[in-house]
Image: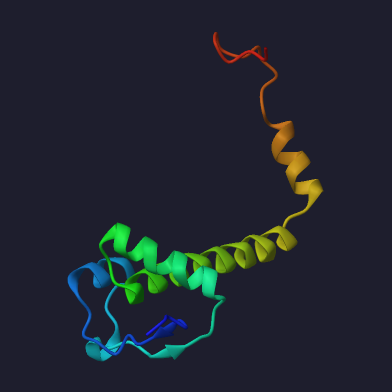
Length: 107
């Protein structure tokens, strides 16, 4: 059956999965059905075989990384809104004006 990215993760978590994602309540995961372009599905199958992991594990890892990246981006955006150039300038004014250490000079 060609892969149309049917991700069936209703299996008990293995040690490796727990290591990546932590404990999941009840020890089970949600099933997600997604359609992806055939070339991407083929790459996914090849990479899973190359890495010696299941397609489910590979999709879960990739999804976790992407969700983490989005959350980090959002967190940085929220924190940036709290900052101000005035506060930045006050902090930078406290930095001593001294020559860099040997090896740290601009080239």
